[in-house]
Image 1 (cartoon, rainbow, N blue to C red):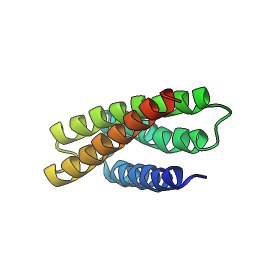
Image 2 (cartoon, one colour):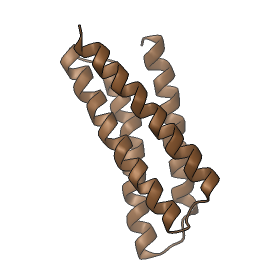
Image 3 (spheres, one colour):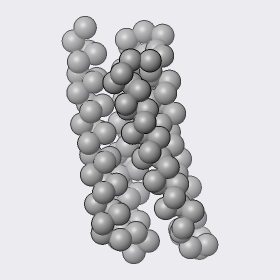
Image 4 (cartoon, rainbow, N blue to C red):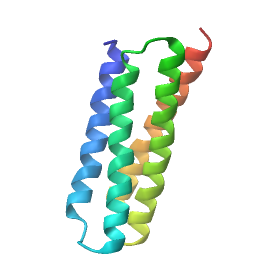
Length: 118
């Protein structure tokens, strides 16, 4: 695994763990259950798809997997906004996690562009 991929795997795993910690603290209501399922799946999908992109079959495969990471990050970010709007997470937590999702999005966009230039 290349150094960039190893660092991204650490970051995407930490991001997924932070989201799962929130999921575990959500109240047991129907609406929070819907959100918990969605945000948990999208955040862990980022981690899993990045792991797959670290050992690609081709450059096109790496770009495709990283594109999936981008989609899942954008979805996770939307769920984080909803969690904040419904008062399930505080402003500090929402800001930190949406900030990390924005940074990860930027890193994946840059990587995809760089890979596309090969």
